[in-house]
Image (cartoon, rainbow, N blue to C red; front, side, top):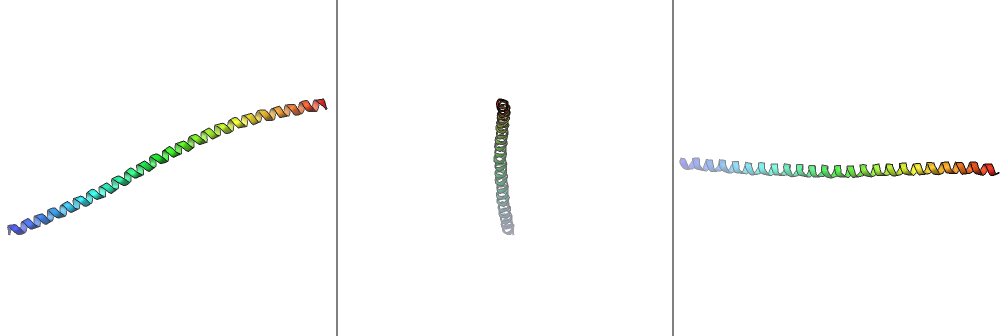
Amino acid sequence: MARAGGITNAVNVGIAVQADWENREFISHISLNVRRLFEFLVQFVKLFLFFDLQRSTTKSKLASLNEKLDTLERRLELLEVQLDCFR
C-alpha cells in the first residue's frame, strides 16, 4: 500500500513539474512580447521625434524663405515705382 501512495506522489510531482514548466513557458512568452512591445514603442517615439524635428526644421526653412520672398517682393515694388518715375 505504501507503494501505491509513492506512485501517486510521483504522479502528483510529475503533474506539478509539468504545470510549472507550462507556467514558466507562458511567463517567458509574455515577457518576450512585453519586451518587443516596449522596443517597438521606443522606436516609434524616436521616429516621431525625428519627424517632429524635421517638421520644425522645415517650418523654419519655409519661414526664412517666406521672409526672403517678402524682401524681394518689396524690392520689386520699389523698382516698379522708380521705373514709373522715369517714364
